[in-house]
Image 1 (spheres, rainbow, N blue to C red):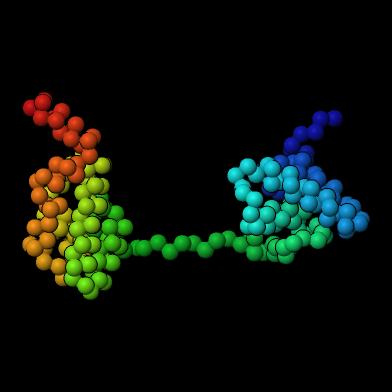
Image 2: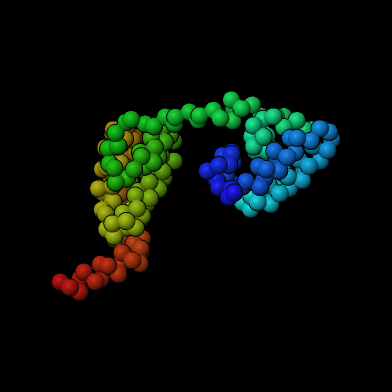
Length: 206
């Protein structure tokens, strides 16, 4: 008679395979606890070998012990260096992460840019706030060059930043425009090679 998977017991942890599960079941039938513990350590070594992504550290060793008890349906009685995990804790569903329902003003910049601008608003030191706004402009320019092959005007970026900030930035935007990042030379240097090649191709076709 053939032994089909449909007639076998379901695998509890598929990543370890059926043979590990059979070994754990066999260990559970041993009467002597010391002998059970000895075989459990041998099975742990096999489980560690099968898990090629794990490293030999305390965290992963404890995870394998937890998995060993899980495979035994928490009935394996051995001397473990770690406490037997509680079934309710291991199978507890994770809490749903709290996503922000606040709409993004400029979706092309993303929510992280808005968070950086909020950080800049909270900075009281004027020079530090100015430098952070400059860094945000650089980041937004890099995103524009990388994804759109478009060297967007920094004045537009500053206006967008102030709009996202709700006009709560205390920096002098006109003074900020004197920064080298706003110069034509800087714009040419800051563009990615791919963006420059695409621009040259478009100019040749005109």
